[in-house]
Image (cartoon, rainbow, N blue to C red; front, side, top):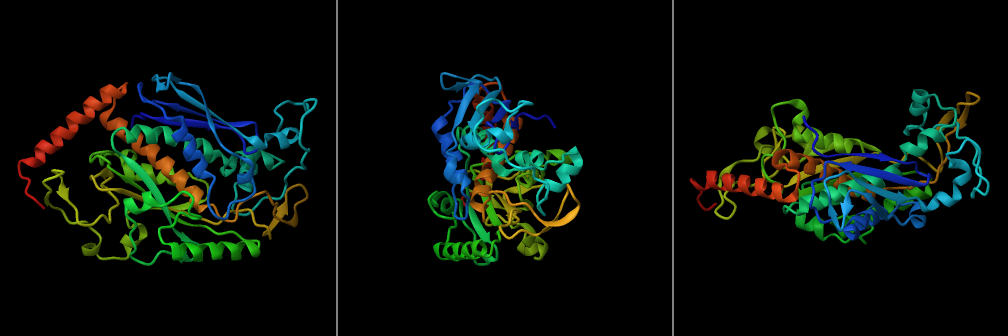
Length: 405
């Protein structure tokens, strides 16, 4: 499968900055840096976040690939500075010898891995004695760079009428009622100031109470979020090879987000519990306004056979509780191999709303890649011509038999 769009990130949680390079962005896209930074701000919100969010105020600086407000077709590079770097220079300096005048304090080596984190597996893989070499890069701080990359992709999609929103449907065992489907309009209308970005205010209050109880107990909570994309053209992705199936690509994109342990498309795991008559979305004659066949339900989440069918894309991420507990679980000190409580790092009690924003970014990036695969070109103008031609052909095909639905 040719990769049309890709990104790479670099940086540590308490290092100087995060860096992200996006390759494959066509020329001529007008970049709204304020809108991009708004996505970074959204990632920092949500009830249950830790003290780090009070320190950082993320903003992306464009280093390359944009001239006079438009992409040039060259790789686009962003820099996101870590404001907390001033407190970590002695611990995170890149030089062999600590630079004169380095600020902050020298922190002790981390040798007690946290269950559920990359600490132990990473230390074994790379041979590190100080687990900080693992946790700094494995930290979810890296997702700020993904949100920057995803925001760029999001702006490309918006040029063609594709919009993305998300909502939180579960925190711990507190969830929206069974059968409650949140529409795109509902999700898009949720204020970013809403504590947990839940569509039901009463359920949201119960979720907040559950987070409070977990905090008081020195524990953490996970949950579920759903990302919805509307206006997605039919025909993105492919069924002809396993690695071109768009549902698989979206699943990988969400599974690679820190602490995500499962992904659902449409009704997700519920599809395994129902008979086929209550799972598959019936196909009715085309509507006069859109010219496309009508689907009265969208249990498939906008994807059939790995290909978009014109319905809203609906992808859910299932997030485990965060690994750092204020009342730590049992572990082993790797320096002495004696039983010890796991290390404690500054962390959140719950970060599901933030994970939802990261999920939006990753969905946007995968959809943009699939969109360029289908309608690709080196410039926005070329893509617009390809897109318009394909859309007209689809309308012409179905209008021959279209009757009002």
